[in-house]
Image 1 (cartoon, rainbow, N blue to C red):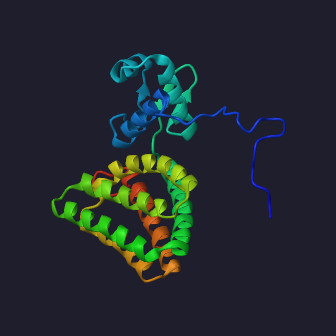
Image 2 (image 1 turned 90 degrees about the vertical axis):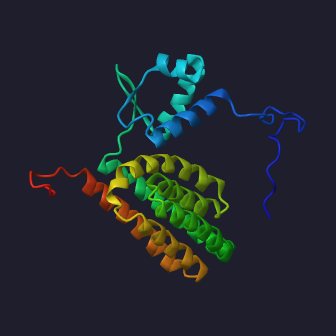
Length: 241
């Protein structure tokens, strides 16, 4: 049996260099606000972030703002261009493919863990989300359906009980939101999105891990295909060039 991790040799067990955090730091709050603004499209893909303007709008000084923006740079949501500044990433077809590749890896790993835990309860919780998606679809609320889509996948990963998978997934979901804005026009039938997610929930209920895996892969591949098609220029006849 391996020994439990304890204080480093020569260090008193009573030393507490890392105390409990009472609340999230200002840079953390700023990073979350910017992350949400990027995901919602308030900060558009490719747009430049001006420090003075953002500091004024957020009501913060430039120090914590820079630290918050640095966190998003490390996450890949912002890109630094030499002598020009920071810009929101653009979800090019190449970036989208890479993001969905990473998402598929995280969600497939999460699904495996769900089957080791309680797939029946997971199926019930996921089905509750798809019912909400169906209600918003009947109202022709594309934004609501898109948010339901995000909620479904965040829940799926959280049900794996892995904080690390959830942390990785949260960053990917910000990029997913950027893609969803581009994909909305490609879904002429919003009802189909709920059915696609319900099929995944049903496969959990049926205890079929291989089917869940295939459906998750197909789900990601469909999104990539739609994004690629949406990015293609059209000819004068209105068809793909």
